[in-house]
Amino acid sequence: MKRKSKDVYFLEIADLVSSRSTCLRNQVGAVIVKDSQILSTGYNGAPKGLAHCDAVGCMRERLGLKSGERHELCRGLHAEQNAIIQAAYHGVSVKGAKIYVTTKPCSICTKMLINAGIEEVVYIEDYHDELSEQLLREAELTVRQVHVTRVYGRHGTGQKRTGPDTQSGLKS
Image (cartoon, rainbow, N blue to C red; front, side, top):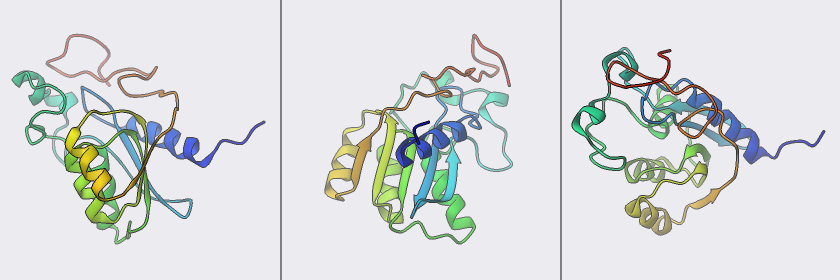
C-alpha cells in the first residue's frame, strides 16, 4: 500500500474536522501543524456555549447575503479563527507553522494567519477573495492547493447540515 503524503494526510484530517461544523452553508476545517505535529484544529461554527446555526438558522440566509460579503454578519467563526484561538487558549505558539484548510482563507482569516506567524497555507477548495490574494502575496506566505476528494462540506459526499430556515437535508 502506498503511503499518503503529509499534505494529503493533514488535509484529510481537516476535512474530518469540518464534519463538526454547524454552518448551514459550508463545512470548513483547519489543522495547524508544525514539524509534522498537529498543534490545533478548528471548524466553522458559533462561539463556545452559544446556539449553533443548525439550531437557530442562518442569519446570512435570512438577509440574502452572498458568500464573501459582510463577514461580520454571521454568528459563526471561521475554521482558521477557531484553530488560532484554540492554540492561544491552550498556550500553544503557532509561529512558523503551516495551516491545512479545506477552503482557501478569506481576507479576515488571512490577516489573522499573517499576524499569528503562520508561514504556509495548504488548501483543497479555492475561495475567490482579491484582498486575501493580495495580502498573501505581500506577506510572502507560501500558498498551495492540493487535490483531495472531500467527504464533508458542500462538495463532499457526506450529509449537508440543515436548520430551521433551510429547505432540504437531514438535521443532525
